[in-house]
Structures are given as C-alpha cells and as structure tokens.
Amino acid sequence: MNTDADSHPPTEEPTAELDHATIENENAPDECAIFPREATEEELMTNWITAHADSFVSLESMQ
View (tube, rainbow, N blue to C red):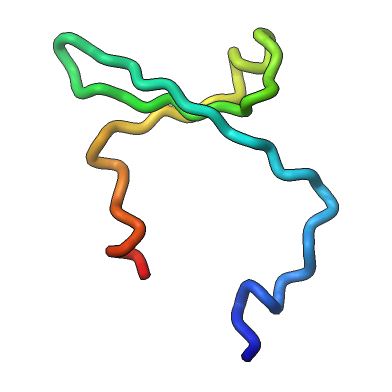
C-alpha cells in the first residue's frame, strides 16, 4: 500500500529533538514553549514556538 508518507523522499537534513516548558501566566492563559533540545543559549533567543492550550488538539481527533 502506497501512502502519502511513502511517496515523499527522505530528507537529508537531520531532525531536531524538541523539548518543551510550560509557562504559567497569572493573568493570561498558560503557554507551552517548544524549542530544540540541544540549542545553545544564543539559539534559544530565536528558535522557539509558543502555543496556548486551545492551540492543541488530541491525536485521536485528527486520525
């Protein structure tokens, strides 16, 4: 069986392992910061994503 994932050639770029931290805000929704696990302090200043709780969906709902 050929799926879309099978039809894409493998990338030569290594995949980065990600880590996360929860930022608890007193007067705003909590946030999740996602960043490369092996990033230097300098890289962390620009290589991150934040998301609020309502930005996430369950894996089961997307299958």
